[in-house]
Length: 340
View 1: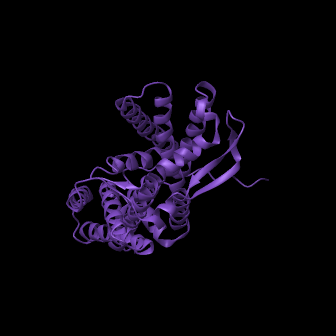
View 2: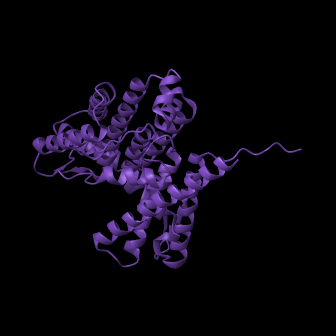
View 3: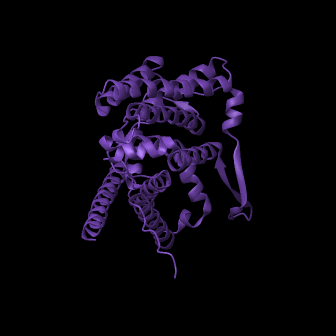
């Protein structure tokens, strides 16, 4: 007799739905729109352009699973980019600039964590203040746009990982290999680290428990305040990494860098199966949520609707669809469990 198969958890089910919809959506784009969607480079372009968003979405997923929210991530990313560019252009060291990026991110994460976890101030208010502060500090550092002039850094950011067997033949007959930026490698490392944290470490299990039911977590002896503090520290750390990857991709900074990134990160997490109420989510789902969100924008542009408001409309529609889908799926599963 075969052993009874375990049913999918809510996290696994929502993640599976997201992955399935992404595959179907991209497959339809390949069949109907063709063009760049038929080339592997299109996937790499999506990864190159959105590596920083993927990283910051991973941090936000951890916070949201724990029942919190962090809308400061875009402002922190912007501040990190401006600070590091000014430091490098002043003759700074690349390694020290990386530490500067991580230090800024973790400083914000630590302050947010302390105010939210130990003083019990609402996360939305605290992180909103953090976003305004970071944006203001970015403007104070420089009102004018900045471009990296550091030769060693520019040499590093121009380095690409080439994959010839995923390339394509150009019209002149030359092989154009698929190219991936170093920031994409950093994004995959962050995904792996967060996946291991949530799946195999005590902190991850505690985060799920707190997001699911804080009172039950307290009764189980979980240190809720410490766990929640650490989730915000992780979010700040990854915001620092995101800022450095953003700088490596663009090589420039201005006061409006990463504008709207926090909203895109929240949308990516929700589309990936993370519930705003906490307790459910997966970083793999978040990755595919980010890819789905950016792919639908690319499809809209490829369809000829190049005005920016069409991308906003389709993104909003997609977010509403996934929220409705999550609600229906989870309510039906709840009824089935209650009927047993």
